[in-house]
Image 1 (tube, rainbow, N blue to C red):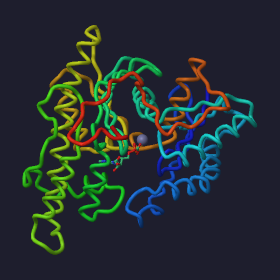
Image 2: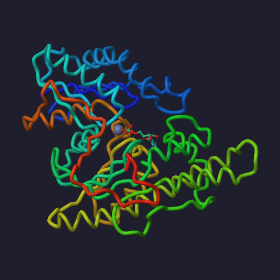
Image 3: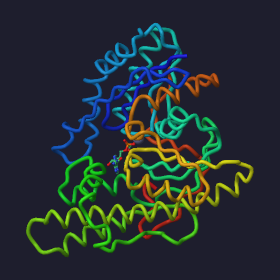
Amino acid sequence: MIVLGIETSCDETAAAVVNADRRILANEVFSQIDEHTPFGGVVPEVAARAHLELIDGVIETTIEKAGITLDDLDAVAATGGPGLIGGVLVGTMTAKAIAAVKGCPFIAVNHLEGHALTARLTDDVTFPYLLLLVSGGHCQLLVVKGVGNYKRLGTTIDDALGEAFDKTAKMLGLGFPGGPAVERIATAGDGQRFSLPRPLMGRPGADFSFSGLKTKVRQTIEGLPPGDLQEQDVADLCASFQVAAGDVLADRVGNAMAIFQDLHPDTDQPVLVVAGGVAANQVLRHRLQSLSSEQGFHFIAPPPNLCTDNGAMIAWAGIERLRLGDTDAMNFRPRPRWPLDPDAPPALRGNGAAGAKA
Ligand code: KG4
Ligand code: ZN
C-alpha cells in the first residue's frame, strides 16, 4: 500500500510518499519563510498563491525521489483542514485531480490527526495513548483512542504555545518563525533571571493559557533600559520564557496523565506522545521526558522534522484511513475548522472572551 500525502494548510508546501510498512520513500518540504519574512508572519493570501505556484513541482520531485510513478499510488491524501483555507483548497484540488485521473481513492486528512498519528509511523505505538499537541495554532491534550477517535482533555483558552513563541520572538526582534530562534538564543541565556508567570499552574484540569506569559514578556522588555536591547537581555528573556513554558507544560501534562490513568487503568505501559511544531524544541522535550519517567509513562517524540508540518504525516494518516476503508468523496469541502473531538466541552474561560482559537 503506497500513499501520496500533500500538506498545504499553512506556510509549508509539502508532499511525501509513505507505504504501509512505515517506510517514508520521499518527504519534500518547501518552506515559504522567505516570502512571509518581510511581513513578520504568515499572510494567508501570499501563502495561497505560493502553494499554487509550488505544488506541482514539489509533487513531481517527491514522486521522482520515491522512485515510483503516479500509477503506483493506492490513494492520494491531502490536508482537508483545519488551516488557512486558500492553501487547503490548493492541496485538496490537486489531490482530487490526481485521484480522478489515476482512478484511485482520495482521502481528506484532518491536519491535527496527521500530527496525532505520526508516532504510529515512527514508533508503531498502540492505542490508547496520551497526546500533547503543541503547534502554532493548537495546544491540546488528547487521548488518542483510535483512528478518528479522540477525547480532548484540555485545550488553550487563549494563545497556542507556538503562537506565544512567535510573538515573543517578534517582540525581541528575532524574526519569523520564532520558535527555533527563541530556542537557539536561549542556550546563551539565564532562565532564572526574569520571573515570568506560569498561567493556570497548580489549578486542576488540563487546559492551558499563554497570553499572560506573552504580556509579561512585553512588559519586561518595556521595563529594560531604553535603547537597543542588549544581547544578554534577549538571551535571558528567551531562556526565562522557555523555562516558564516548560513548567506550565509539565504541570498540565501531569494532570492529564492522572486523568488518562483513571480513564484507562488497564493500560500496562502508558505512553505520552508529543507532536506539532513546538515538539521540535529540545528543552521542552527533555522536560516532558523527565516528567514521563517520574510518572511511569513511556515518552515518544517523533524526530523534529516530522513534528513540524510535513507530507509524511498526511500520507501516514491516509494509510491508516485507507486500511479501514475510510476514504472521501470528490465533493469533500475543505474545512477551516475541524476539531478532533467535536463533543469536547468548551475550555475553561479566562479573563478575556474565549475566542475563535479557544
Ligand atoms: O505544526 P507546525 O509546523 O504548524 C502548525 O500546524 O501550526 O508548528 C509551527 C509552530 C510555530 O509557532 C513555530 O514557532 C513552532 O511551531 N516551532 C517551535 C520550534 N520549531 C517550531 N517552537 C519552539 N521551539 C522550536 N524548536
Ligand atoms: Zn501543524
